Image (tube, rainbow, N blue to C red; front, side, top):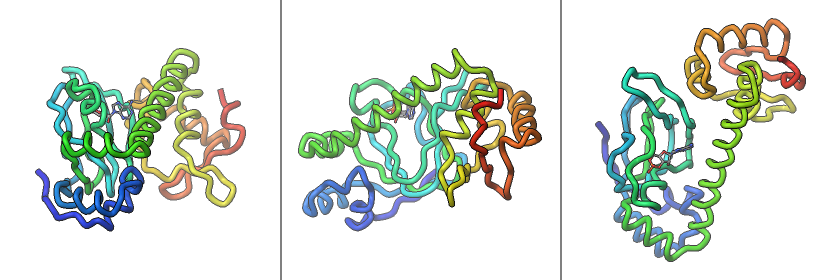
Length: 224
Ligand code: CMP
């Protein structure tokens, strides 16, 4: 279930993907795009479903995942504000490649296929931003394939924490809430194994928990 709101050009101008558009284009777009809010746990896209729109996150986080009939999940990515999804099906006209569910209450902008294609055709910089996004996803997927084949669970957890961390006052800190179940689903391991590894990393001083945050020590990659 979602609620619909109107969209201002100021809101669109603040979205990096759209910031390259002219005032006139932003004005045109503001009349045709939809702004929607979703509660936590809402399914926005389903794998195999029809491809009719592009989505841009204004606030909140979503997970992109695949699941089997037994309900087992692999998380392909967790996306946050200003990131977009649903572009793959619009570009190659194939069904949705994955499921998308909100992890928190989310606010989204929804652009129809026709409007998205028109904007891309008229704006090389916007097309480049979409391509950069696709290249980043391919790089991340390559890294994940590499770590699944080459690293043990210690290495995979360490790599995921380092990739998720931001530098705050010279320290690497994971501020995004990641449950052990989420980590397990992102690195192809069991939740129990991830719990054991995290405990070991903490006891050995490679990571430190501070409130909701995890601080990572420089030597974590030597942890296995
Ligand atoms: P689409 O296939 O249209 O619908 C599902 C969307 O999930 C897809 O477009 C992408 O926007 C997004 N998606 C699929 N795979 C990944 C990935 N590996 N990393 C980040 N986002 C992805």
